[in-house]
Image 1 (tube, helix red, strand yellow):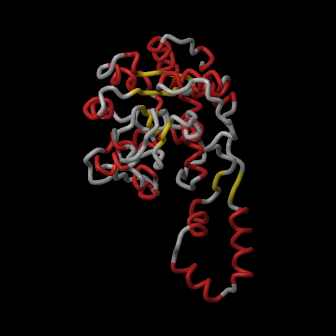
Image 2 (cartoon, one colour):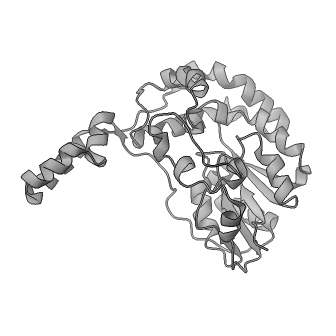
Image 3 (tube, helix red, strand yellow):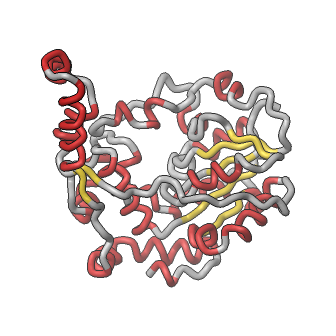
Length: 302
């Protein structure tokens, strides 16, 4: 009784963070304190290691749980009917379905699919907000993706590949009966959260009549960094800052630092209709194939 009974598989930037916090409200649901342990992606590995800018600080590197005993400890003592976690790269990593089937063949699986253009752009904004994405043009970031993948950058940078659902879903159907994987669209969660939750609660085996409190959606990007070097200087430890602390009183230093931080942030760029039209040919085939694969109308993604 020490493993989860259900998993939120992703996709990243498809509402899983907000859903994780809503699931925590249900009295019959236990969610792991580590939201994204990614055990089934990195089981038995020494650690997740990537080569992209500041990948050593990313959550895949710093928070992934690779030891089965440590993973089971996340659920130790849980008495709730359903136990879950939300590792958003489970859809993307090819070895995950086989590992889940090995450890927990009866696991209930939940995937939320988002328009891959919007999903990729949201991930781009996320990295810009964190001061990790140095390219300010989304189209250029997409063009740089193959080289970044070849260089071993983390999946956070795999903007288009992470939304390739037509490769990801069949891997699960090879390991599990179709009824064991519940697939939703991001729009289901956005437009009718009550109906979405009722169906999800029923699927994971808890009281579907529970009415959760829906707060603000998490993980939205309201500002991005203009200059990554300035951002790092202001937010990371370095020798010059140590010297300045000794020379400049805090009452002077801290307001100046706050002013510099505010001057270095900007409103996030927008995914304009013109840019969407420009990018759509790169995504069209995948969207049409996903539509056929899951049997749902995705014409609004086009």
